[in-house]
Image (tube, rainbow, N blue to C red):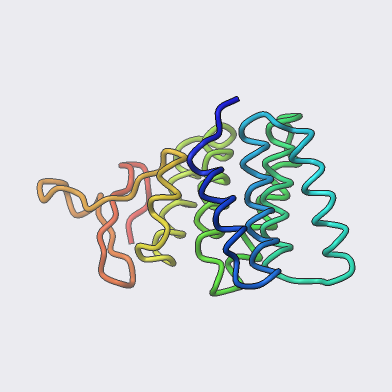
Length: 180
């Protein structure tokens, strides 16, 4: 299997990590990518290894990244609802920690992806719009990789379809999304 650009970028970031916790968080993100690529055994091995290290040295950011990686592993191996539970845990931990905005965006995009299959587009839009409002522009490119693009809507769209984030950026929501 050909190496992806993201895998190469993560490997380089792990090698250049300033501290061991940052490197472990990047390794957890790499494990999630391995699961997405179908390398489930390699992903499970890395997740288990990092979980064992977490038991000896608890760390909130690492716990959050591992929850996302574990959720992605469950999603791609069994396609059951356990994935949503792990990804929700990652979302909540990232939401509580200001330094985890990238993880927050990724977890929100995955939750929206799961919600679009289960509850429809409205739930997906709600998750994306609340996260975009919190992030006000951070990590858009990462969330876009899952197909949830936020953009400045054209001027001809009605006001009912537009919202502003706290930072003043405009986001476009579907017609079914509630207006505020």
